Image (tube, rainbow, N blue to C red):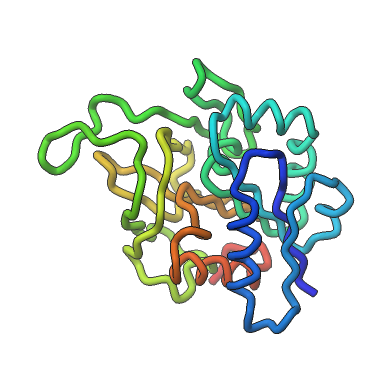
Length: 220
């Protein structure tokens, strides 16, 4: 049984994520079990962990700290594959500009920045915030989660802040939205996406299917 724990700290679209995992693994014929929980023992018993997130980073970090999710995630990424989604990705960084500045988990060196007035579209107009809808993801480094995902596939985004990582070798996908932004990155056992794979139709399901088979190594 491949058990996938979706971390529940009250700030994620848990139903969509768990259902997408179960659907993407449907050919496994009942060998995939996805469940939402904040229980440390259940998360420790899982083979894989998903760290989702929506909403304001201040509220997310408050709940993460209150429930000791930070410690659970720190332990998980040492031992098993972890997929971070949207605000879950942003929470991995050191600091976010949102809510007048919030200290994040610091598991990945870098910051979360706000789309400023210098971000313009191809017609010279300021981009709309939030970045919401479908956009292309350019694969800039190979990774097992890109298996059978065509380069420049469109994924679904909803966010007003974007990630800047110090180490460009950790970047695995970029997207053009007024400028180059990081749409996904990897760090050891973590693969993190700014987009929502669970809302990204077939390419998203393919990525989730790859996650169910990923052993945490970056090799392809």
